[in-house]
Length: 342
Image 1 (cartoon, rainbow, N blue to C red):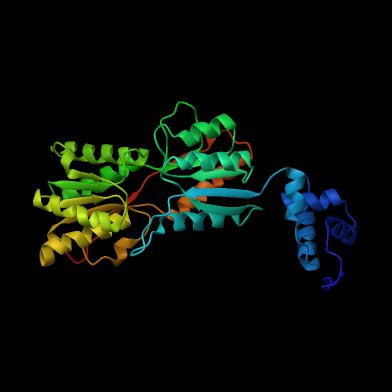
Image 2 (tube, rainbow, N blue to C red):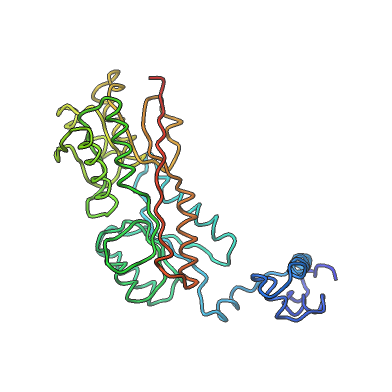
């Protein structure tokens, strides 16, 4: 049988079954996961489906399974027009890489930073707008996590809470990353290191503070609270924050991400000009920005794309009924140092 023309009826499971002389159940299993079907039959069924131009009716599948086949991502898209923000975009690339092998479509929305965040989660659950959620900007006693646990709705957080009830999460070891970067600056000879990071209501920021302070104490230095700047992560804010730190004798900066690093670096050059290279920099980076900076910088590196893939895999597992305790993963950063010719 040749591929049908435009006016021909759609190819169905029955069409393929009739072509091969097998049952519709065999065809369905071969096209889905091959359960209880031999590998030769699976290959034959799939080749025939491709030759006949079979396209799965996802609307019918949604009705049969009672699912939306939508995975929703509520992520922090930074309000950064001058530099841009690869964070959420990189995560979404990873989501699409993972979900490309499934029936799921990804729907992404900016995560609210105010009290409306819990309201949006409630709308998703009550309206059955998705089969599962991924979200970030995690707080220690996150209200969204508590709500979803009570609703028994599949979700994965990018970051951890301090709730007693287990839930699915993927996280970067932020305490280790901050310790690693700060330690690298200290080994370079920096002794007065300022930290430019996010709002301390977020768990990852508190974790980073612990790592930063631990590294200082290990080198015999007592942390100075006034050498920490916490606010929205934006290049212009970081740029404006460095002046008072330089006035206080700071000789190194620990930055939260690429955006704050570029802002802080610009601020140092504004103030010091050609002397800017004497100031040390370190950051947690989800990109290889170190390859494009003509100065020395330490980057505690992780992959945004790989993180997105991991979050998507965990969400698919939770949608499939996996135990939340089996859906928890912590990744460590790798220290990369760009010499910058120094």
